[in-house]
Every structure is written in C-alpha cells, then in structure tokens.
Image (cartoon, rainbow over all chains, first blue to last red; front, side, top):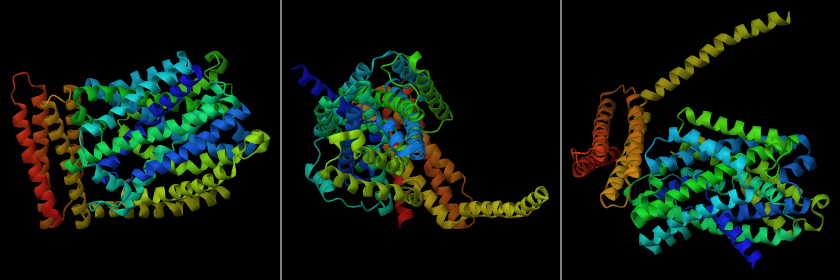
Length: 409
Length: 158
C-alpha cells in the first residue's frame, strides 16, 4: 500500500512538475497563433523527454552517481566542459525566466508590479533550497502545480467545437496569416520547451539525492512514462484554451496575463484562483529545480561536494554557486528585460544546446562499465538514434529560423 | 618591430572599421526610411496594437461579468498599454521620405493614439471610485479603437 502511494505521489508530482514557464508561455503563444496545429510537437517532445529522463534516471540508480559526474569521467574534461557550458548557460537563462515567471504570477494575483516581487521570489527560492528537505520541496510544488489541470477543466467548460480542435491537431497545417518559417520556428521552441535539459539533470541528481537503487527502477519508470505524458496533455490543454478563446479574438500572447484569460472565461474566479496557485507553484517549483540544476552541473563537473542531503556547510561551494546564479538572475531581470522574452529565447536556446546534453547521456547509458546488464536495449537505442537526428535538425535550424522570422514575430 | 607592425596594422584597420560603421549606419537609417520596411513596421505595429486592444476588451468584459479579479484585469490592461507603447515607439522611429509613407505613418499614429487613450480610460475606469469614467465608456472607446485599427489593417492589406 505504501509503495502504491509512493508511485501515485511520484506520478502526480511528475505531472505537476512537468509544466514550467517555458511550457506555459510557448503553448499559449502557439495556441493563440496556430491553434492546435503544433500539438504533434508536444507529443514528439514528450516521447523524447521520457526516453532520455528514463535513461538518465537509470544511470543514476545503477551507478549511484548523477549523470553529469559520469559524463565527465567517461568522456573526459573537454567533452564534459562542452556539455557543462551548454547546459549551464541554458539553466541560467531558465532560472532567470522562472524567477520572472513567479514574479509575473504574483503580480497577476496582487497587481503589485513584478519588479518588486523579483527579490522576494529569489529570496524564497534560496530559503527553500537552504532549509526545506528535498522530498517535501519536490512533492509540495509538484502537487500544487497540479492545479493547472484547471486549463483542461476550463476547456470543457468553454464548450469548444471538438471536431475543429481535432482537425487542427490531426491534420496540421500552417494558418493562412502565418508563414511556414514561423510555424517551424515555434515547432522548435515547443520541442525545446518539452525537452529542457535541466529536467534530465534534475531527475538524475534527484535520484542520487533520494538514494535510488536498482530496485527503484520500476517506480522511476512509471513516474516518467505516466507522469510526463499526462504533463504533456496539460500542455496541450493550455494551447487548446488559447486556440478556443484568444485566436478567434485576434489576441497574440505576449504576457502571462493573457494566458489566464481563457480560464477566467471558462471557469470564472474559482478557475482563476486555481490557475494562479498553479502558476506560482509551477514557476516556483521550476525555479527551485533550475537553481539546483545549476549547482548540480557545476559541482558535479568540478568535483565539489554537492547535494541537499548534505548540510549546507558540507557543500559550501555548491550552495554558493546557486546563490550566485540567483543573483545573476535578479540582476538580469532588474534591467527591465521582459521575463516572457527571456522565456521565449531560453526555450529556443535550449533546443540549440540539446545535442550537447543528450548525446553524452546516450553514450554513458550504453557503457557496460557503469551500467552492467542495465545498458540500453536495442529498441531504446534505435529510438534514441532517431531522436538524436531530430535533435540535431532542430539545433541546426533554430538560429537560421530565429533570424528569418525575427524571433517568431 | 613587432609593435610597429601591430600599430601599422591597427592603423590600417581603423579606416576600414570606420567605413564599416558608416556603412552599417547608412544601412540602418536606410532601412528606417525604406518604403517596404515602413509598411512592414506599420503593419506589425497595427497588428500588435489590435491584439493589445482585444486583450483589454476581453479583460474588461470578463471583469464586468464577475469572472476576472480587479488585480488580474489591471495587470492585463497595464500589459496591453505597454505593448501599445512599444508599437507606437517603433512607428515614431520611422523616417518616411515620401508623401505616401508620411501619410501612412500619420494615420497609424492617430489610430495608435486613439488606442492608447482608450486603454488609459479603461485603466482609469478600473481605479475610479466615482464611476467617472465608467466601464461602459471605456468599453465603447476600446470598441472604437479596435474598429479604427481593423480598418487601417484592412486598408494596408488591399
């Protein structure tokens, strides 16, 4: 019974923890401009993240070490540094976007300007990382993030024409007023949002924090294979709400305040209350994860003592690195740069850096020295190779499309 | 000797860099007055402003229907006004050279000013304690602004 509850809790936190500011903004932008014609990308992204998160969790459970530590040891400092540079830069951008997201969500709830909420949000992130236990931190934010299911509820209450939505999703085409290059630019952004590298690093480092072993592999697999696809379903619900309310009204999403309007229309103030709790929880949870991921990647590359399971004094450099990342995030946001813009760029840069993140994981997951009999099977490897091709294409096409479309404008 | 060579090389580079900077400046200012660029900037500004006004209309409607809180409505209106101001700034930076493009920019600016006024009225309606201006007045001004923007956008596409 206790094990079953553990599995259920793991799934629920995986669903709630799947959506972050990148998913929220990109899905709403895409829904308001392309309807559901890019829903297939969410499907492709979810399968990809399931594949690599599962691989990375397995590496951690079997070797007892986080993926990044193994990558540096297995591939050497140069390849490790390339992996670190790409992942850390994206992490830092995502930390900035998530803190901005928390501040924007709090502005929506209070009407106090978001710039005033930024130091509060960053201090709260630091305090939670400093004081709260890993398990509690992960479960509370994941479960509160589940309130975003209100997007799916609101969609039903809006009584859309389901045939039209299904038509957009299953026979995708570029809407008349949009260009083909903008369509593919947003396809890459959605793919980057679904496969953000920090999710994999957090998953594998979290496995070490929680002391996973081979016997936990089944539970980890269920969490990933059930939780992430349901999280993907939530992403599609966000896009569908925007497609039903914002697209016909001629509203192109450029701010978080527009993302909640369909929920208010469908589910009123009660729905709005749920969505605001969900927005704060999802962005705050992701701010915690990305801040920790920044510390994890640096500490694991340089061989510092790391982990929340250690007292902060025993992992001083790990904690100091996270504080510096938070301060950099605050400094960037204090310039007045739009957090939504930072989010939009972070998901595209995330797509650009994907090969540097996922290729090393695939190599390590195939090394019998670390994985013994738990190396990837043929089917997983075949699927991973297909994904490496997709990732490479997305990575190569991202910058030319960004220039061609003026960053999707 | 090496130092002198370095100085000579950087000395040779300076005029090239200055020429490059000048070419870039000409290209940038040239772009600002290029008729195609003007039409595209005006078109984008009108579309973005239409989206901002539509957001404000929807937010106000939902607030009047008791579906949206005061804080969320105010935030949506603030964001819409910021979006509109950005569009207006882009149009103001244009340097039209012909009669036709000057008229195009002027018309766009008038529509954007009307939209900014209607959004300001909506914000005042949200914060007023004496119902002056009230939400209906704000809604009607927003409707007018939306019509002007739509007419201009259609005209530009013909």
